[in-house]
Amino acid sequence: MKFNEVIGQEEAWQRLMLMVDEGRLPHALLLCGPMGCGKMALALAFASYLLGERQEDGSQLQSYNSQLTSNAEAMLKKWQHPDLHFSYPVIKPKGTSAEHKMVSDDFSKEWNGLLMQGPYFTMDQWLQLMRAENQQAVIYEAESDELNRKLSLKSSMGGYKVCIIWLPERMNLACANKLLKLIEEPPALTVFLMVCEEPERLLETIISRTQRIDVKKIDTAAIEQALTERRGIDAEMAHRLARVANGSWTKALESLNADSENRLFLDMFIMLMRLAYQRNVKELKRWSETVAGYGREKQRRMLTYFLRLIRENFMYNFHQNELCYMTQEEENFARNFARFINEANVIGISELMQRAIRDIGQNANPKIVFFDMSLNIIVLLLQK
Image (tube, rainbow, N blue to C red):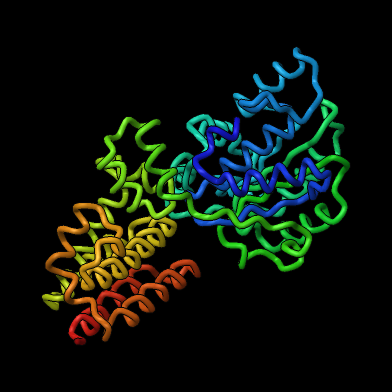
């Protein structure tokens, strides 16, 4: 994968190239940034460069002959290079024996299929491929032992060995402690690329042994250009979609999908606010039971979407279009609803939803969490 396939992120790429050019490439990099900003795409492109793929300008790190270069590029095209290793969160399927220790390779076929679809994907897409239902994905203890075994082997191509760890914050404590030892004393010419969304959840000792690169949201202009060039969207629609995406390519793609998850979330938000305004406790209870049936990851994404709409409706009252980032459907609802989100309740509603996100993440009963939230919204909507 070449860098020109990454949307935006020229600054981060130049920083990576400078490390290589100056001969100070660290053995562990921590790529941090919000979902959809292209962290994984950047990691895949950099790994491909380290493993010998030629860039558009003909530059190449590994001094392979033409045959070796062609072989490396052919393997990287299918993400099956022997010196490229992946670690990622997995579930423990129902019926798995207690003796079996889950590792990433248990879902290698599904993972390769996900990568072949493109470098921009979400946890929800991954969970669907694993048929996770309500399970949360974790990097288990056995994964560190497996990585230690793989990385102790000699490089098959004579150059770097690269290990991409997607969402290292999902490692359980035992795995994190073992991985720490591996990072402290890595095998020769081994580079760890950790693609992280919540670095605050990582052990401080792991963070201290990595070099962090903060990957910013994608520039709106870069998303707009990608929508017109890669998806054939007309300029006006691409401009609106790019602004709503707020730096996330995955959000931009979701907006293109008529059956996207965000459309469902918008419907659930509208229903929640209307029922709360009507003080319809019976239907609010039914609403709570419905969303409680979603998986926990989906529930957290929904609440995050709700938080964004609360912010957008609050800003809508200022009548400054440059401050609002809504789709046409969201704006249509905001015309009548926005006046109910004001200085007296916007902080209270936001804190209420943030607390719900925290409680869901800590495995609280979702029916109780959502019903309690909806009852509190009744009170907060009355504040002026």
